Image 1: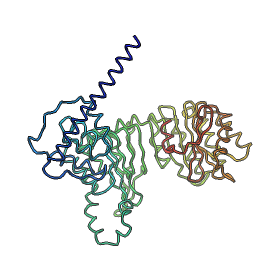
Image 2: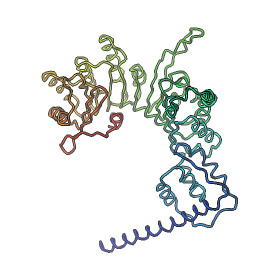
Image 3: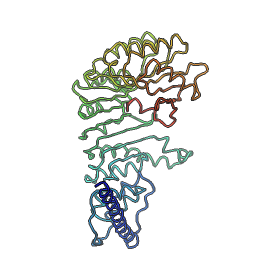
Image 4: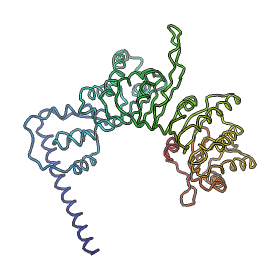
Length: 454
């Protein structure tokens, strides 16, 4: 029986192999015919970002009645062929081969969009606004605006009068995005990255949007437009906000404060991961929501004020409807004494002690007695797997793989559940992971995502 099964499996492999060759021949013949008999030149698309806005042109330029008889493939076969293509331009060209390829290729082109260049962003957004058939295919959208990036190709661009001609294009940028967002009704992942020197008071682009996000990275200013949008996002599970100011801002015209900018108590009912640059945002958003992963930063510099801030933050953390799994609290000025107070607060509350897997950023004491006390507090976290420690004040700071392995092994003597240690020295991070009982330095790990993924 086993021999016969292997024989059938081998025959199946052979059949799939020859079928793939046959289908490849059909596709190659059709593409060759298009490239050699098409009326007009095939559009040249130089990169991935510009190709989506050209798909409609490619489809419209096929002469009527120019279809060859072909064998219809299965949906899986179409997808496998598209997955083998190496560029977005090839995918756009393949849209013209048949209706079957058009169906699969358009989904490959528009499912995930990354928009960086201003002119191309406007062009693609206008295509989405004018083609609802395409806009509903967008599942993930990343918008990146940085005037510094746009000027990097020409260091002297600001000295030329052509820079004045860019003003109408920039003025059309956010209205084009607003129009596209209203049409992307099935959008689930939205990232808006804005350079620090660029105007961020553009949350009005989210007005009248009907999509329901699952993940949202937002560099926009916190205003009533953003608050109104977040109040509608019942499916959101992951949120990053750069700004937060629930008291509103004072306008320079009439010196009158805007209304209070507080989310509805029942908003964001599924929010589990929150990253915010102000602890005030965490204090406002954690209570009553199932948050399990939090990354934030202390806002105060004075030690007494920082202690009050920490006490208020943990009083709100314990009001989460789910126990915490990851907690990363940064500080603009790390100190060994305050770090001890921080970890003492962590092990004091049930919300942060029972399921916590990731904790940071804590100052690792230099002296042996203080370090033993640090390990003693860490032992109060029975499921901790990853610890991020600050070692910038060490003289000399650990720098060699052997030093990192030694400190990691020492920590694991007291907390055997720890499988990964992140050492922070100024702005450099070194990740050391236990693999089959052996500590290894991992140079290619994305440290920004570790607190999320655990």
